[in-house]
Structure formats: C-alpha cells, structure tokens
Image 1 (cartoon, rainbow, N blue to C red):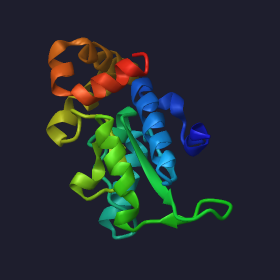
Image 2 (image 1 turned 90 degrees about the vertical axis):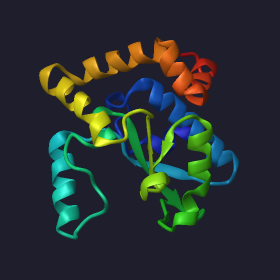
Image 3 (image 1 turned 90 degrees about the horizontal axis):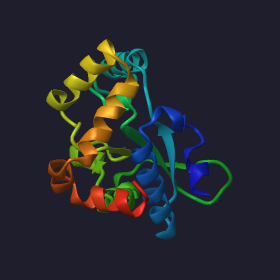
Image 4 (image 1 turned 180 degrees about the horizontal axis):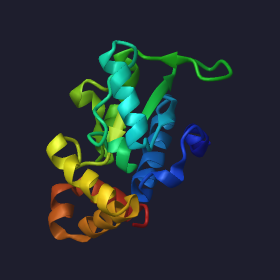
Length: 177
C-alpha cells in the first residue's frame, strides 16, 4: 500500500536511498493512523523557476529559486495529509496534521520542512541551505543528475557522513544500503 502513496511522483527521478527511507517513513506514519500522499519529488530547474515566480507573485505556495531546492536533485518530497477515509485524497493543510510526518521523518534521519516553515516537505540531510545546494547545481550543469547521486553515494560511505547522520546511516543499513 505504501507505494500507492507515491504514485503521483516519478520515483526513478528521486535518489534511491532517499526513496527507500521515505517509503519506510510513510509506512510508519500509516501504522500510526496518518496517511500522507507524495505530491512532488523531482522538479526540473525550469519547473522550480516557474513555481518561484508564482510564489513571488502571490499565486502559489512557498518555493525556492531554481537550483536552491532539494527537489531539483531528487532529494525531497512534498506530501499532502489525507484528512479522512473518503475515496480520493481529502487534503488537510493544517500544521498539526503533519506532526506525525515530522516525527517519523526525523526518527529516520531525514530533514522535516516543519523546521523551516514547510511542514509537508521532507528531504535528505546536508543539502538544505543555498550554500549547501549551490555545488549540486554546478555539478548538474557541468555533468548530470547521476553524477550528483554518485557523489552522494560516495559521501554515504564515509565515516564522517555516518557520524554526522547516525539515524539515517542506521536506517539505510537496516534497509540494505
């Protein structure tokens, strides 16, 4: 059932270790009675730029500039809380509806957007600020998204990364990474 919660996004465009941990996070949320459906995963720089333009014009939700969102590198999901059991998604955008998501994402070692005013957002750690994301944009522009993911794979193997991300390192190990 958990994969069905991600049917609106192309999981092939999202970093695989992040997908696996996120699936587990959403399964734990469901076990606690909270249902979340992924609405966004990967976004191109062009899509991100348009969302930012709409946000600045007062016509859309919060959106970072192109290249300054973890979505641009397949490192983030946005979710909607399904507010009741009726068929189809019944969106609940109230902040308390995302408490369970925040708790379970944090337990899994991921970054919950509620820390910075974006409660439906969950992302990979270490790439939250513009300073952290800018090198990824440079790498994508010079090489490819695959090269960013290869860099992340290398980082995950380092003792320094595991020490900085003990919860996520433990989750990944438990999940076979």
